[in-house]
Length: 149
Length: 145
Image (cartoon, rainbow over all chains, first blue to last red; front, side):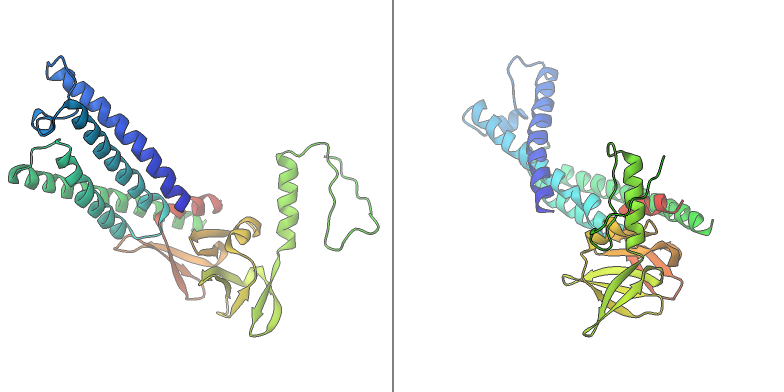
């Protein structure tokens, strides 16, 4: 278990930094700029130079990656109920990844974006819960069918 | 496959020696069959008495505070000296893992049910029940052929 956590943490750091870098590259191009910006102008202007801004961004991307990759173990390696899995995974991403995403300058921090994000997050996890329950119900029915034969 | 049986003097008891050209999947099947014969019963301990418990009355093997127990169809419980992962590897195919700390005998299952909170409830023919999580259902289904 500890080995799996460490494994996923490493994958998370590498994946998080890679994805973050790719997205920021694409967004830098899309904004029509000729220089690279790791995040929004507003974020970059908080630092003395793009170098520090990029390093800070990379650390945040890595952290987001770690939390995502490690928390995915909730679904693959625990014996929890679907409700418990969904609620705890929600809490981890909502209370850790979301603040990190705000810190990384992906969204400007204001009441409107905070509320809309919370609503999107709740809808997303509600859909996830229902899909898992429907799939589990089908699996249980299939197993019962086989048991009868 | 040509089978030759040779009596080997001085072979330790409860041992079969296989002479093969190379170890392939067919040989593995034969080995698991032999091992399956071997664990048709298991040593269970009750109080300070050891006794053989036939596997066909075993309903569930479960771990609790680093000890492994077996519960039988008449709801008796014995302590078992094997670890759960050893049992998972050596028990016949009708025994399947259903959680981190339990292996059950599918022959005694009467029904699976999904609870409202999304846990898999397993009802046994002797009236007892246990629970499992979704990730084990696939293996259960494969074993039920």
